Image (cartoon, rainbow, N blue to C red):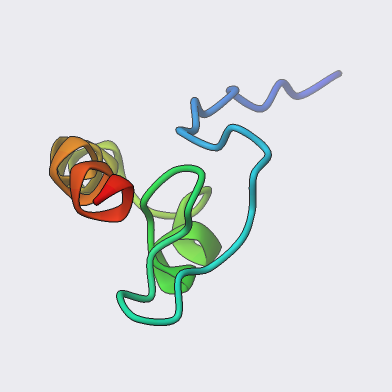
Length: 62
């Protein structure tokens, strides 16, 4: 029997460079810890991080 693994959506856009001042990724706005945990954390935690990303990106865009 083949077991299917659900695809977890990610805010990653492939621009994986960390900002030294904030610790956020310049592409998606997540911290390295958030990125590392993304696939193993629950949907509520992913939703909470996702809700913060627009504000983080505004800070990064300066």
